[in-house]
Image (cartoon, rainbow, N blue to C red; front, top):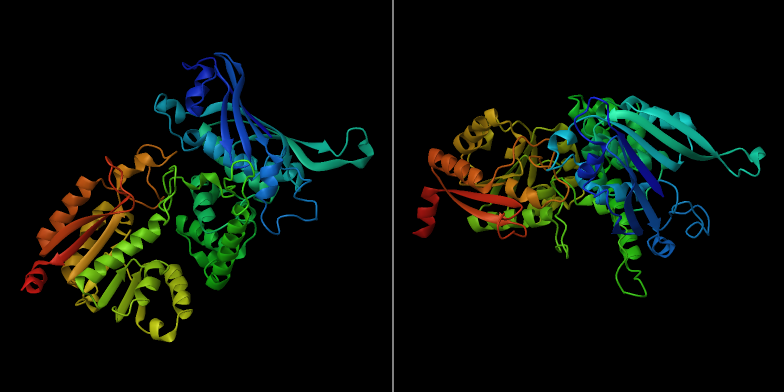
Length: 522
């Protein structure tokens, strides 16, 4: 499986074509090798001159690993796991290699040449074998609107028997003047789309990856719906959720995509089935080393809010799980019985609140009608004795609501960073001033910790909707000011596995009214 990227320097350019090596973070003077889930990736430069430079990514697939990592139902015939095109045809295997080997370039990060990383370069990308049952026309329809000149040549089934006709494989050549990060993001998303399948199981994290790497071009692409369906392997619930989020990015109503009524039961079954398949596949171990074969997409540790930094040993729990556990523990410490979940989203925290009998009244508030509908469906799946303690309301947290006053505690879990800074004062007044619960728990990303996320560009945020991501000092300054203004004491707790210098990935502030503290002490 081969990918070549050629950069040609314009006559008036002040940079050399060999600076492609800086952008890719790979030295043109040597061959480099990188272990992958299903084989080995090699990076080499067939040519490296000031006027023209070509980088090649060669992916060697290990057939034994490929067979052992195969998920149930992935083949169309009994010998499909042994006889297939995966070793040589560009597919999701190559997309994963791009994200792991060229991760910094994919995210547009280059400390040595930051200006060049943001410069549109004359590029030519060549792929000798791309599976595409839609033929050359499909390749043109997906790459053409992105500024590429597309040359797609069908490959014959067998050159010795021309009467057999063409295969569904293309030799693909793309030429255009684009930023390297944009070019790589196009390949990352669209190669699996043309292929129509993926080598790893799909879950809701695939939606985040699609939106992250499709940012800036997918929402305006004329084939957006088709790309979304193919990228998500036509999993209906995932597709509809993705289209709804794309609609929100366009300030459109999700209903215009028919993407609101996500069937949560179907989604849960799909994720559970996919997880079971992954667990079964990972149970197969390599006879030589005994190491489990990883079939998951190695790029999942990217720049998203739910992503974890790469480490020798992954934590047992995800950051999202640890965050909810920390919030629940903080709520219990306040003795709260009547709780507000402000910015409840699709109800992830609500499900854990209703499972605790100490919380006898729970109100979830969110501005998104789509999220509330999903949360409502999740509540309907719960036993009646749990669901009847939950009330859902649609509302903006920057406006006061008298009905929210007098509760024991309010939670703003990963909410404030979604509010524009000029509107943050309005949220403070609505929550701490007007609603004035006895306790308020706020969590938000620790911006300093972002440096540990592999492939995340300097100054980038974990989520495309974040307006800011504060450092620990900035969060402490904000929380101290709010507490002093509205009569709260505040304490801070780290959430997640902390780094010695940069702190924990999530920071949490627990506000409590000074009068309540004194009463409790007495």
